[in-house]
Length: 84
Image 1 (tube, rainbow, N blue to C red):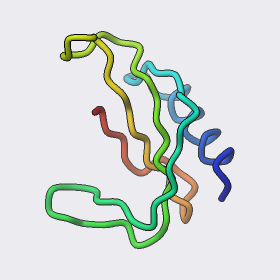
Image 2 (image 1 turned 30 degrees about the horizontal axis):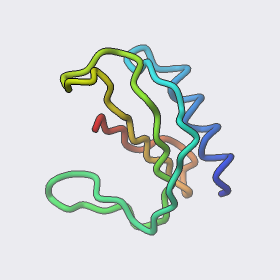
Image 3 (image 1 turned 135 degrees about the vertical axis):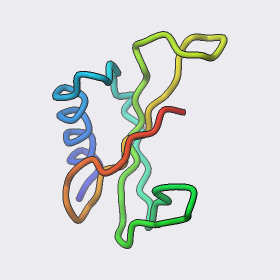
């Protein structure tokens, strides 16, 4: 999967989600694995981590948080979303 495919999948996820209001930054990072939770469960295949700027006011001083959307190269779906 190329970066542009990952960006498209992430954009479709945002467009179809009622609880995420964000715009893609265009940044994406290819990773061989991704930790899904605090118990160190990892995805056993490469993923793209796509970054998006939250359009809602957040808890930080600047009011902006970033989303990390993890796009699986295996399922071609967003497998994890984190607000950072």
